[in-house]
Image (cartoon, rainbow, N blue to C red; front, top):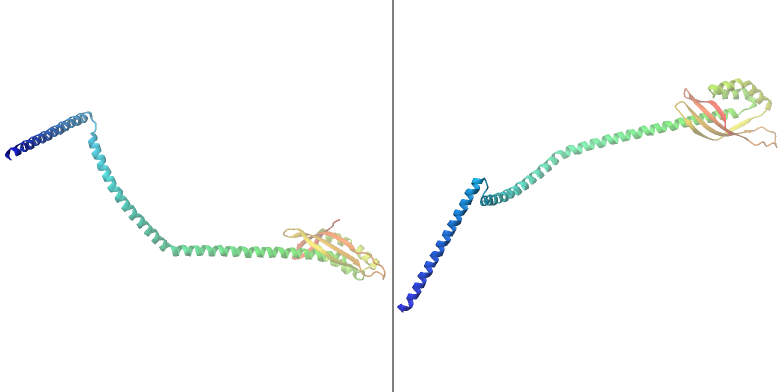
Length: 254
């Protein structure tokens, strides 16, 4: 039994010695590598170069620091966003009544201005139409006076034409008044004029040109005599004379 155990102890001792030798060799190898690395580092330092190992350690440290900073930045960014949102919401809540009030004032001003414009526009349009109607009425009345003559009161009818005229037309009609009265008296005729239509051709501040279509007919012919009515197409210039609309020029239109 004792002989059987002796080889085992010897083998174990040999293995232990071999392991110790390998460990010593590894330590020596590591020491040699460390020495070589130290020499290399000293050479680099002498040449002004950086140690790659130090750069690696620094980079690793920077990476770890950057990761920690990024995590802190994410938390800070989330906090900042939340704070900004709350601040903006609070600002809108505080300003909303003022904004609504200002908007209401602006809308009121716009509506008032639009209403005033519409009122003025309507007033100007109404005034313009009234002036047009006054000029047309003056032209109609002047033409009716001119083509309606009763020999029984020829002087009054001619004077009515003069009274409804002004300017050059009035002067010319006055010069021919006696001749017109004489012709009417001799003809023993009664003519009656009617207006077929009238429209403004142009208008300015104090005058207007009115196109007038009219007919005149002798109403006291003997029975059985039927003369056709006379057709009148006239361009009449009407002047506003102190609010009275009188003929200042009469032209015949073919």
